[in-house]
Structures are given as structure tokens and as C-alpha cells.
Amino acid sequence: MLAATKAKVAPGKLLINGQWLQGSGHGFDTINPATGEVLTHVSEASAQDVGQAVAAARKAFDDSAGPWRKMSASERGKVLWRIADLLEKNIDELAELETLDNGKPIFESRYVDMPMVADVFRYYAGWATKIHGETVNTFNNAFTYTLREPVGVVGAIVAWNFPLLLASWKLGPALACGNTVVLKPAEQTPLTALRFGELCLEAGLPPGVLNIVTGGPETGAALVKHPGVDKVAFTGSTSVGKEIMRASAETLKRVTLELGGKSPNIVFSDSNMDAAVKGAVNGIFYGKGEVCSAGSRLFVEKKVEDEFTSKLVEYTRKIKLGDPLDPKTRLGAIVSEKQMQTVLSYIESGKKEGATLLSGGKRASVNGDRGYFIEPTVFGDVKNEMTIAQEEIFGPVLATLSFDDLDQVVELANKNIYGLAAAIWTNDVKKAHQLSRRLKAGTVWINTYGLMDAALPFGGYKQSGFGRELGMHAIDHYTELKTVWMNL
Image 1 (tube, one colour):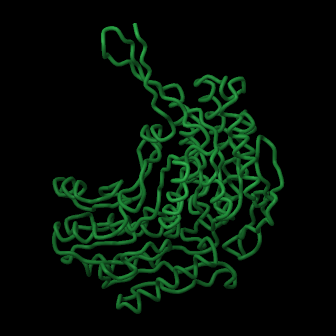
Image 2 (cartoon, rainbow, N blue to C red; image 1 turned 120 degrees about the vertical axis):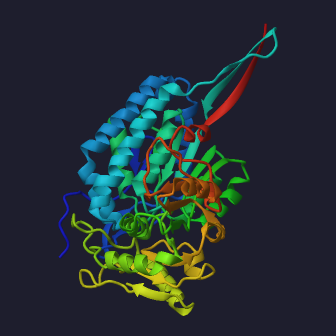
Image 3 (cartoon, rainbow, N blue to C red; image 1 turned 180 degrees about the horizontal axis):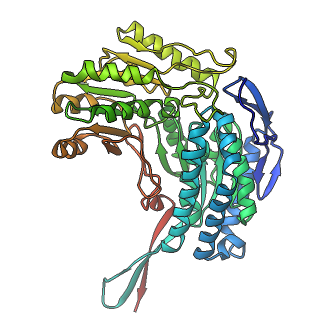
């Protein structure tokens, strides 16, 4: 039997102009991936509903007499701070909803994801009063300066792997800058976004400033194509990111994309072996491997390959897989049956192409095979051209490769369409800094893996997307820069 939950799961509606409305689409069920059972029924936003949400966001942004435009930067910051307070007040409920909907361990939801959501809103609450232009010395008979103004209506579309956290990465800077937002959560995991909408209203966010439309790809496409949307911020697959770019070209929308990854995790023989093993395990099995920056390609220097791999497999077999609501669980359920089958097909591909299965490789039996669980899986003898070393699997599958020297591993690590993150394990400081400069990745971790902070930018190179989330650099994506000349 799976553990009981205290979170209340209610039918989902659309949040438009401060009101909870029934969508005009057919609606859909959101599933508990740990049991395969329906959690609740959720409204589906049609193109007409999306248009209504965009109109509400546009009115809230354009209305010079409205509460959002009249609100000072300091007051906006206070609203964001109140949102953070309410997130912390309701953190246990939000964590349980996230785990029920996504299948991730409650340990991750409660002690990693949700605390960072609150931290993101506090970080951008501080930024609200620090967004400003500059005066520039030009001609003697001119007064020239720049202004930073909000972009307008932002369409935010987020993935299912970190449902509320990814939403916060977009909502924090967007709202701090004075924009209004239409948020579309992933159809697999809408519950925390809807509960979050209630908390925003409670915090005093004016009607129309945040609108939430639930639904599938059609809902997202309607949001992207709508001429009233000024910017699209998307987190998801590279293939969908390309579709969004094509659709946005019609109206020349601003676009930022945080897409897929196949991140190299590089272990040198002079590293702290035990720390590197733990880092490799956490790098791929945290979040069930459903992490865009997961260290899914593990490169181990040949002279320590056998020793390292042996320790890695031993550590992997100790991972507690099971009920996501059990505080001791460290590997939960894959988000959906479809995603589980996708991951299993990649495992079969690895076997067929000649990789050696060292651990796992099968669907795991939990709760009578009703849930979508996969054993933590490790492949050895992987070649860089194999499918499991090139394509994003988005599951608990690790491809282990070997290398001889720094130049070789640079070539292998960069020989991939993605460039989101990378990690280096070595006690040689010079080597670490040299390699970090040569790797084509938006984030490089040295002797650690996966650490994040609201103050540090995150984003990718190559087909991992463009633009940066978090930190001061995200502000650029949610503001327009205006130059003003005055003849003196």
C-alpha cells in the first residue's frame, strides 16, 4: 500500500482575470504515476479560452488606471514577497501535490523544489526596485537616457519535470518587471500551478496579472500564436522548442527556450573517487533522470574505469525505489506510462547497439505493477555514437564511456547537439578551469553536480536553447530597452 496524503486534490479550472472558470474544451484527467489512477479531472482551455486569458492579461497591462500599472516597484516586490510567504506556509501541501502529480520522491519536492520556488520569488522581489535605465553623456545640447520597461504579456509554458519550480523561474522575473502572464502548465502535472494561482490571489496579485490555462499541445499552440502575446518563455523538449520558434516568427515574438540536454559528467583519475561516484549517481538518478541537465553521459578516465564502475554499480543498487510519498524513497515513478515506455525502448536500444547492461534495465514492480517505475539503469562499454549516448532519454538511464586524456574527452563531450550542462571531477585546479572553458555548456559544475541558486543564470548552448533563466540576466528577457533624447 502507498502512503496516505493530506493534500486536497480538487477538479481543476482555468484562472482568467481573477476568476476560476470551466474551460470550453473536453477536459482531461491527471494521473498519479505511482498508481496509474486518476487524481482529478482538469479543464481544457480552447483557443477561445486562451484568447480570453490573453485579453485579461493585456487589459491588466495596458490599463494605466489599473492596480498593476499604478503599483510602484516597491509594492510589486511586496506582493512577490507575500507569495513567497504563502508558498512556505503551504509548503507541505504543495510538495504532496507535486509528488502525487509527477511521481518524484516527497524528499525532493519538500526539501529541494518547493524551498527553491519560495527563494526565487524572494530573489525577484528584491529585484523589483532595482530595474532602471542609465543617463548617457552624448552631445552638449542633449539630455539622453535609457528606460527599462516591461515587455507586456508573457506566455509561459513549462514542462512536467519540475512543474512549479520551472513556472517560478519565469513568473518571478516577469512579474518583478511589471509584465502580466498567461501560464500554461504541462497537462501531465497541472495541480501545483492551480494551487499556486489561489495563493497569488490571496497574496493580492490583481486580477488578470496571472492567468492559468490548462490543456495539451493545442492549448500551448494557441498561446504561442496569439498576436496579443509579446513574449514566449518555454521549457521543454528541443523539438517543441523549434515549433515554438516557427510559430512565433509570424508575429516576431520574443522567445527564450530552455530545452533538452545530454550533459557530460567527466571523472578524472585524480578525483575524490567516492565523491565522484556519489555525484554521478545523483547526477542521473535525482528526479528519476527526468532532468534536462541530468549527467546522462558519464566519462571515466580509463586508468580508473574498472574501479569506478564497480563502485558506481554497487552504489546504484542501494538506491531506494518505491512509493514517492515515503520520505525514504530516492527514486520515484516515471511521470506517465508513455514516458515509461519511451525510456524502456531506449534501454532496449542500448542492448541492441552493443552496450553492456551493468545494472537495472527493467520495469520495477511497485504496488502491484500499477505504477510506472523503472529500475536505476547503468550501461557500460558505451560508444559516443550510440543512441543512448546521443539522444535525451529523460529517465533513470546512465551511459558510461571511457577516455584517455583531456583533449579526447573534450572532443567526445562536445560531440553532441546539446549543450546545457557539464561536470568535472578532479583535484587539479588548472585542469578543471581549462576544461570548463573548452566545454560547450551553459553551466559547468566542478566537483559537484546539479547545484542551483536563484542568483545564478541557467540556460544552454547549441540545441539546448537560448536565453537565461534566474539571476540578474533573466531581467533582460522581460524588459524592453528604450532610448530617450531631449534637445536642450
